[in-house]
Figure (cartoon, rainbow, N blue to C red):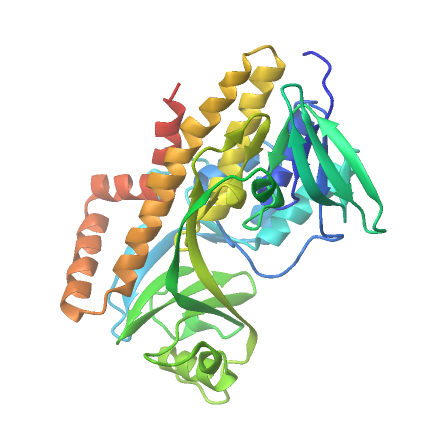
Length: 398
């Protein structure tokens, strides 16, 4: 392999750190810049899909991550309070993955594992250094930087991987159009240690639930539950965020004396956006910098990690002599997955759970139950919803 200047990675989230791990393993020089001085530990993505765990296994990361997470062999869609449900068992795809389950684990744990491994191996990681500008020509990329002491510097590389998230500075600096929409509803995330599984019969660790006039979801982590709630009717966002409103909604799920003892409350809007091209010259976007989607189904972080694997594979080919236009294959393989498999599926998931007509809800649930009861149909559904089918399809694109 020819000698190259370091590749620059912007962002130390799951996507940027995965790219760094891959480059480190392949002995490709890089420098990673992260604007924040420390990794965040707030609650973000928390579901890892089977092929993601298979990929992380090649980096020596899956085992320590699984040890800190909660293995979830099933997930379900259910009615409340009747408990009628369709339960998908991922064991039917055990021949397609080393990890036939979803793993419930905070993304912050993955980031800490990877960052510690990279630092131990002497990787060039610069925390607390912001990228303020990006320029490029036919020969390379230059970034303007500002460190925690407010000192300005620059750096150059052959290529730049922009993994700096939904508000990507790199994407904005280079003028990538970020087309899409924002859903009208606000989701309210509430976390609690209350043991829902001890009160709701047959609950999985991942549950998407219809209730009268609305919906909610319950996702279990090793030591808490994530509850996704929504304002009632004409209730304002401000009122819905009040502890009394949160508690009222949780009491509708399980009545309990003394309350549910909520730890965190956080509102968020769901954005569905994607760039036209993941590449501009020698700059490549990955993860949320390239595509944003509903968290339903846990596909955002997973898709970003898959981006990192495809991108580093492509960069390695170029550094070994392939033509620069090989980079276009990255967009050809990854963008259709984001658009057709992730954004479209997220739209379908949302439409299903937002349905208010009881008859249509029952029809949808019964259709899911028929899928579960048919081994071939269940397998096809789980290969698609666990992102395996999309990866297989992408691998066939030249």
